[in-house]
Image (cartoon, rainbow, N blue to C red; front, side):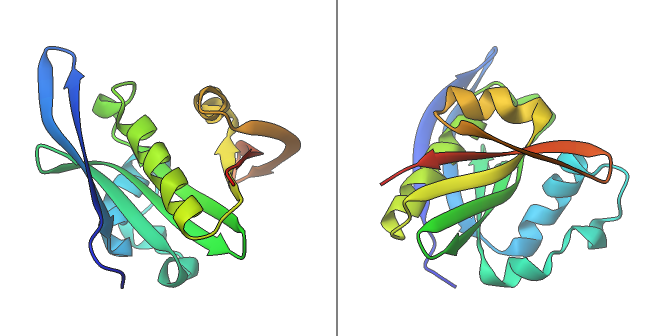
Length: 155
């Protein structure tokens, strides 16, 4: 496992204030609960484990020592895919997702990546488009959820 990586951001949220948003490299199993709660609420926690988890990097955003966003990143040559991007409902729209996306973009550049991409839920394509991801027109449906591949050239 790589050394612990952190990034700190001050951020105001509603009437409360995050004293610090900290982004860290985490173990894959730390992602599972939030991954399940946000993306797959009807599935069992053990179903969140992916075989690919063993070959990726996993990052979590913490606010006031509470995990509020997770993502898993899988470099493959100069292509870097991210998957299972989840932000706690109470933290959505507050900047944690944006900060985590910026963090993994920098991570991908540092890993030698030139293309960052994901299978975006159609309901989330607006978020990615706001952050300079392009729609590819490649769509598919998996388990009743519509997806579109979105990408961003980063290097």
